[in-house]
Length: 535
Image (cartoon, rainbow, N blue to C red; front, side):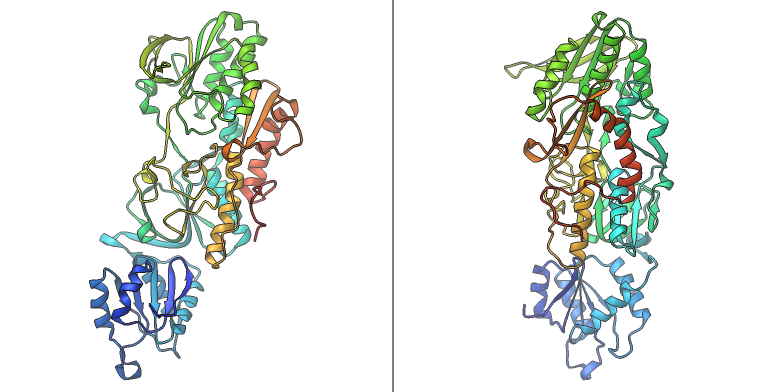
């Protein structure tokens, strides 16, 4: 193909006059639609007509539209019409005229229009278009939106999320120990949506990346030029038989839910003797250290109250190690021994009968055989399996495990260059924590804006995550690490030692950083070790 194609972004390019014989190469280059901006009568009609080209495009599976424009009489209406076409046509789109200049100028007119367009999509669905769509208004979505608007204040951004409340989930473990007020972990979502972003209070039911659209739960379509996927993950309570029916009563609780963390503290503070079970499902899960943190803090309270000797504690872990980073296992094991807790590895909670106070675990032995064992309990802290949201799992964005498949360094999707992802829903192997999101948001923002301007994706995420392991009231082992378990401590202190300063960081500093800095686009200590300077 000898055409001089100018790529303006991942979704739109312009070129000079094309002919039917150019179409196979245009298809091979990945274009899905063609727009003709050259009037048929121009130059006496000595070029291929729009009707001929429309038929040829149809034969090659390309969408086609005719938007003729006189090079000397371009108007805002041409820009409006092009925006309409970009909303309705699958991308990437190639527009052409005699030299490509006219098409480029129409695109500039389209970009000068501030208001989102309303168009008609397939089956008469309502369709709205934005430059950037962010799916999810949790930690990742709000942080990414704020960082984008800090760098590109005029960017047209939509944040899609149905929730009316926003939660600071890292503090729920502390709520379960009675040292943090649960009401301080929630704020109205409306108060956190950054100024300049449009909040669409719906859920995404379907991702349509081949058409640069998402479908909402009410059937409406949202078109985008760039997409950020960060809807979090789904807690699959239903995968443990009987668990949903007994949560919040019969001694069954979980710090993984806002309404249940206070019940954890109620159970811990009232238990004087008996059996306490703690479970951890197979990875990946949100905050991999949280299940054992619940055990440590509970045992610490019982020890201080003189009740621990009367309480039998078991920690059932579906994995094969106490913690995924080997350097932190020895100090954690010292606390396991201090609390006389019994560890059961390769043990998965599969069923609960709350009224009978019984739990069943599938336990694998050394030979690989699995047996189901019944365990009585007085208290059960259950953590459910965790999966990608159905809309992500069932979309072309997903990998074989259902997570949004991105490059682990750039966080750009491996097949759709205008799509990025961060947070719990993406396929990176880092621990799924708010600390990871703080750094991922900067990388995504930097690289997404680089794509818009045709620059290289120079920002790199090193897998950083932090897990403040609350091993007792007043002391925390601050585990910070990246890809491959590489230790990435922020402070020049031995990270394997439990410290009071880390407790203060966990209970006072980190919540302040979250509400006042991270969600506001103030990026303190967010640069990954391999990332470039911010644009």
